[in-house]
Image (cartoon, rainbow, N blue to C red; front, side, top):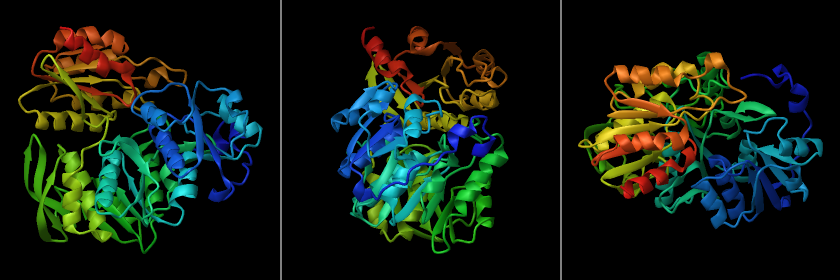
Length: 491
């Protein structure tokens, strides 16, 4: 990660922030960028804890916009210094803010009490609780959600914060009164005034690392930089804590040589791991397997999620839960009642014989796993993949080859042409024409257009009864899901 002093605008990034009062002395909290998945969940945590919450964002989209409205949290549409004229006790600065962001600049120039998202989580909600942090390039949200659900079903009343909305009770957070706080540990940077990864703030007692694969090319220059971030995080685990590692990933496995704390390994393909699955049987309703813990089969499990990646996620949860004192029966009850997460293979509807799926995948490996999982879930249907490379990292040329390989199991592929932004570099920018050409050379029909408006006509021409339209984006994608369902219904 770059040092603040290395930035040409370092004088705007390095400044004295006022000390943050104790949690008891704060009454009003304002979040800049409140409609992001993480920030929206944090807003919910503050609201549940009894604080007066408000915020702003440049655009809103479901599901977070709907959740904020349900809580009657005021949201300013658009950013303006006037939004902060009634000075809040605390301003939380989202990591999308630059030093010149109008509200971030106002908070800095007027000496407002301000924190980053992860600082606020640690200060107000983790505090001295037993922090269970789930990290990794892939699978963080699903693993964290499943962990929180299992602990809730077992009546442990955990606090938790997830970067997505769980279908069970439609929640993504809880203050909780139990000893645990379960949180998704993001490796993206913290704020314009703090370039550490977010997960460095979460005071981990037990941590899971699901995978390490180069990502976030906009802030990590090399794989070594990315690897170093996870190494630094692993060293935060105290000697009476626990580091839970996916042994199937060689980058994750090597962390065991860098720490002094106890480790627990899990995997499917690696011999000698502490937690694994045998006698696996997959079906349209998920997966069944025998859970193996430290060399012994402890029972049969049903997991209502598809895909190898979700099996690994479940093994991580089982390992942590057993180490934290939950019984096998409590874990089975939690797994069996888990309904998944919005925007993770979420069925949005079916019209004209076409199932429309919404998924958050944006890294090539996640896209590949999502397509494969859809093929396993609907083996008799054709998977038509529709992808928007929207994130700063997914728009990079470095991932072109990975995306070409990610769609090999799809029956057809449609790609949204990303607009060229002010912070994009032409030499590093993804070439959609080259990518669609490579996919077509594999014998897979492929096309592209600008955004939902351009894609809808060519997608509709391709879709036929029995297909699955698998839509993947980490944003709203122009409301393409509902628009496609409406168009299919009008056929």
